[in-house]
Length: 61
Image 1 (tube, rainbow, N blue to C red):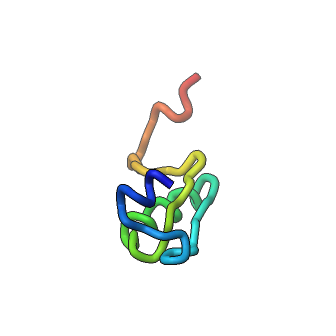
Image 2: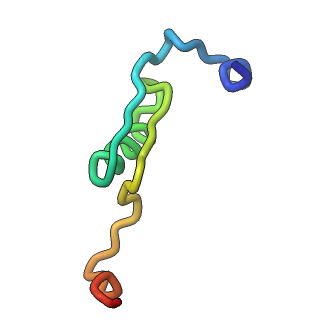
């Protein structure tokens, strides 16, 4: 309720909440950044937000 009061939002304004894991988590975060007026929130679990090309440390143990 405090978030709704702070941002002057109602739950019925944006009924969509996006969530995902891994790649779909990244998509949900990007969708929220691109279209904040269409969603009330998003949850990205293990979402790849910052991709690093040729990340060689991935295979090191």
